Length: 478
View: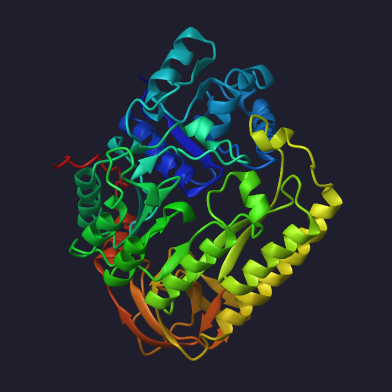
């Protein structure tokens, strides 16, 4: 294979896609590629796509169109398209964009270097879409974007049949990793300086279904508590159907599991939930939140909501508003329903007119923002521990602030103190919240800075002598 070529990965979609992009980067670097520096035209551009949103197709083909003349004037340049949209469209990508060299699916990330080489030698596009998982992605090398935080995939695929979602058709049925393999990866990451991990799965709290252990996810959370040096554990996204009291207890009893829960609601109407094939109802959803807050009073609850699902009436929408008021979400990702070809909902009667969907969406957005702002205002005067994130932070006028996440995952902008050391990304800062906005907090009183191994790892990575970070998969353990 050709070595020394540069690459760029452009990622769309969810955290699972972002995690896959780290694996794609790792596979490419293992094959001799190196990441292009800012401002440098890469020899290879990889699009890791999403098929969930309505504009996914337009966004991809628009970007491919912009690259066509660049490729035509750049000898040897290659373009690859992977991810969920590639899995769905298959040969359609090459038909609409014949200058694409490789199309690969969600199940064969590791094949990319070989497909690129074959496309170069044969001088024709290579399309390889596997129907089932060949190798669990976490067995592939990775190039992590962060020195101090990492995603850990515990399962891939989904066994649910939500009528609005195409992901199960593209990612396949759920495949679970063994707990020993997951913990081995976490321990290896901690050894590299990581202090925060996020457990990933399409339906993360159904973990264990493949090997018949319904208590496996709660057990895994507790096992994370015994990993020395691991300070923060998060997970996404759970399904209300599989949310058990044992998981709530594990969250509350394991000190490094953060008081934060992102649990999709989708709709507050029982009738719409049934049409969506979401196997819970509004009362059950609110009951879970009530039990989580009883066990963890400071827990921040966030969610996903779809507006305008086929057949949704004004009464149904009012049900969603009622649940949002009762749940007091710290934030909500709100979406206007869009027809996705290949899903049952796309052909359902009662498609809601666009102008009605937009009006309801605007009302919902105003409500959830008001609630989030009110919830954030209750934190003014409180002390929070912030894991400093990479980047320049935020400037308000002449004030430059560093940014990071509190334990409950709220975004916090912190004003540095002249009396304290400058924190590095990965270090922990204790500060007092002095102002609240709907989407962030401001802490103008920095009280303490704690240097961490994660900050050391960030400093080592960003030093001029650093060769970059390419991590092999750790040895598996029983």
